[in-house]
Amino acid sequence: MPKITDKVRERRAAAPNDPFFSFEYFPPKTEEGVYNLFTRMDRMCQTKPLWVDVTWGAGGSSSETTLALCENALECVGVDVLMHLTCTNTTEASLREVLDRCKSKGLQNILALRGDPPTGAKEWTATDAQFKTATDLVRFIRKEYGDYFCIGVAAYPEGHTDCVSAEDKEQDLKYFKGKVDAGADFGVTQLFYDCSLYFDYLKKIRALGVPESFEVYPGLMPIQTYGGFCRMTTFCKTFIPEEIKKRLEPIQNDDAAVKAYGIELGIKMGKELLEGGAPSVHIYTLNLETTAMAIVDGLNLAPKTHQAQKVYPWIKGQGNRGSQETTRPIFWAQRARSYVDRTSSWDDFPNGRFGSRESPAYGLFSKPPKPSDKVLKERREQWAFEGEKGMLQVFVDFLNPTTHVKQLPWCQEQPGDETVSIRNRLIQLCEAGLVTINSQPRVNGALSSDPLFGWGPSGGVCYQKAYCEFFCSPDMLKKIEAALKDHTHIEMMGINTAGDLRGNTAGTQTHYTNTTAHVTAVTWGVFPGQEIQQPTVVDLNSFVAWKDEAFELWSDWYDALPEDSAARSIVKKCQSEWYLVNLVDNNYLSSDLFHTLVDIASKPAYSPPPRA
Image 1: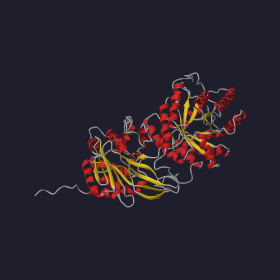
Image 2: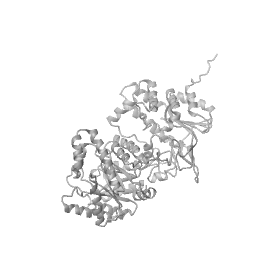
Image 3: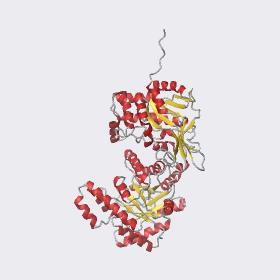
Image 4: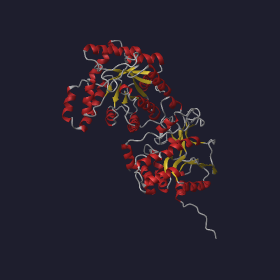
């Protein structure tokens, strides 16, 4: 992952007159909140913030969640990350453990802070005498890790909250100079609502000897609610201009009006800061999307062109792993975060493509924690049905963007735009009993700039084979196996929860074993000056590893349904008896996999004539 200072330098070289921006998030307290934050980050990061940062939590109370958020944002959202790190409850051993973990994941940006007191403590005290201030933290990181980390520090235009006198504020400026001297690379300010305070602060630290090259990015905290605004500004001892007080006073009980004013004020302050020479704005989102995005839009900070061209068909991570990864099995296309998490322990990744099958870590799957009552309620509303036809209809509804079914256990988000050309066929397959969970249409030579199918550098041409993955009954699988003897260009792999692995190769039935090697490229690209790239494959070994997760996900549906219901029994039968099947159509020139599959599924099963 690039250092923030390097990214700023590159951005300035490419667009010297364009300011940039960044977002801040905090670790949610529930697993549901973490998932929703990732979904929100996915959307918000389409506006191309230069980085996002994640707070550490009072006393390091959310440190594990912070680390997981940073790692997954880096690899799954594909955005550069600045991780907060505090002295609170820190020892040298715990600090080394965190920094070594960051280094192993490719996290290179740290915001070094003293931190707030742990929950319940009235005053801040050091756990380890060598870590009393953020300066101590900066000095330790620089001494022990050299230039590997890019280190940011906090700046307080109105003085730290511990300051009670003018002398304290003068000393706070000297503390900031000490952090710079210890090896900090940039600063980010605490919230403020008077822009002159930011520019005055810059003059004061320059007078102390902080060089002009040391940039301090202003933090902008939008007003979301009146009560939250009052609590935060009271806690931080923030000066509130009279104009803001007068605007808020008459609308304090109107949440919509307060939010609208928060957007208006955020845009006004952002313009004043940028026009005054600030290099960027750092937006404290409070994990909320609407206001932050409206400010980015109002300041014209988002890219003006269409969505940036994809480097790969999937989001490429920015960490150590992402920088090396060039190929992914297609099975986790709808569950990218699950894939990154599961394969992080596959010993040989990525040099052995997907790790050694002999490794005890390969394919390891553990069921995630039990969802909250709120999540169960949402799933029950989306996945309720009566009878097997009702179950099939849930899959049909998922393919229709206007219905209430917004996700399936196997698909965290609704199908992308590229499925438009095959949506009607997928609906027919689901109605016929082949419930699809992953698919792609054939593409014979789309330009790499194509908004639906393009990826990779400009001037390239992209190809992909039609692919379909679904669950079906054993009888349906027998029908498909029989029919594929007449379609030798279609490869098949199927497996049930017990591990009965079936397949065909070039029209010949194959009973795969655990030693069979079988990899088929289903997406590839041809680019100037490069070897042919094949970033997406169907891989037998990964398919077997994916099987455990794919069948376990039926349990999410089962758990969401009422106890002792007929619907539960249907789901359990699918989980225990049905097969997970994928098909690859090697004729990417002219074949129609989905039309062929609909024909196969719609025909009655062959039965021999009665004996005379």
